[in-house]
Length: 86
Image (cartoon, rainbow, N blue to C red; front, side, top):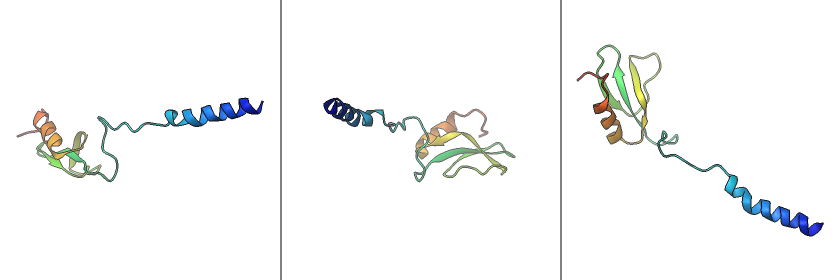
């Protein structure tokens, strides 16, 4: 009985790490503390720009889309967005 119990404990000890949550950040917003960039639109003029902080709710700027990990990817999103005026 002791051997079966020890074998069970050993199996659980070696397989438990495989059930741990994996760090999958591909395609997601960067972790907090990392810099992120946003495409922000002025609600009065409808012009957009890239900013490094999320626009505050209720302000005159609104975020278009999600956070981007680099300024280059935010700039690409800005160019592709059809709601922004030139």
